[in-house]
Image (cartoon, rainbow, N blue to C red; front, side, top):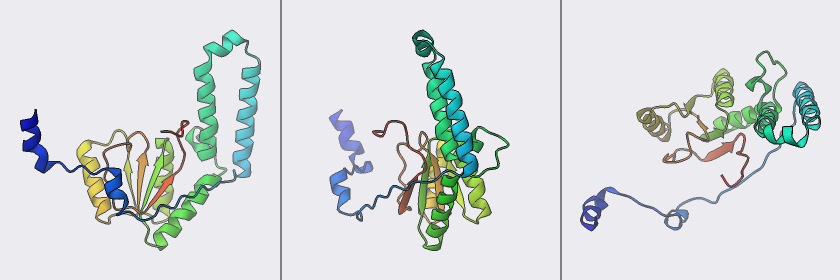
Length: 196
């Protein structure tokens, strides 16, 4: 094992956090809050009311059996906050969060910033890709179904300065990507567990 380690050592670059930190600029973190549009708020409150009625009508046994359904309902509420089109096909009422992010990305492009944008919902990334194309903002889109060789070519192209924004699903982009071409990261929506 030691002999193999010696043979491959010249081909492996391992950098730990302490080594790299001194070369990185200071991190600036901002939390932005978005207001729902009126139509979005109406959809949210109606769905919340429906969930409450269903949950309050359950006895403790039914509640235990329906935990997955309750979690799915909470996920729907999160999707409504992102953009109700994630599960309402004919929704036309806009999304406060989407409009805010589009404004951020237009400003980023004007200031020659390069952006990584993460979302848990691939449907949201598809909506973003379409909306950004209408604004003349070019994107790469990395999802779980992206082939490994395509991932590498997209990463290399982005790092070389191609396209303005890299849209990445949280599951697909969790590890192994060396995206040094970006100076801005936007987390469109977060995992339930903030430790992830």
